[in-house]
Length: 133
Image 1 (cartoon, rainbow, N blue to C red):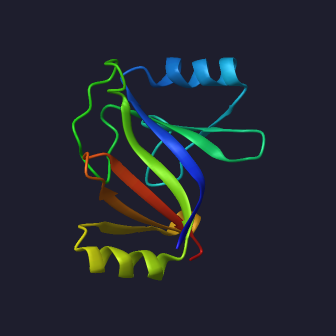
Image 2: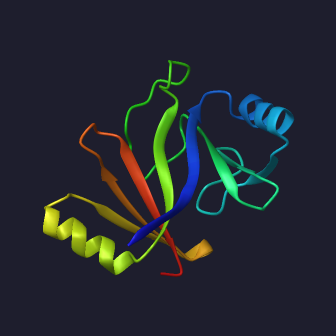
């Protein structure tokens, strides 16, 4: 198992449009609708020049796989999780089981993605993404 790169940052906000506009304007990121089951009203993804969705912006009422409490607007309070693009899914699951590490896996068929959610010792939520693995 190896980490390939940081996948994205997820921001929870009560100002979805303002936040998307900010990242589009400041960083020249392209705003696109998130894939189903998310909707344009509750989730926007911001893409870099390489076509990677590096910032996910979710409304406060957007359904989330992990319904953690967040406080939009607080210092780092709007950061929901850290996502890493990974390969070696079977190896990761084996390591987690050996460690006794709690996790939850989810498949997003619309984009060929398997996600593994777990928390680090500091309760930081990690989303480990495996595309086609």
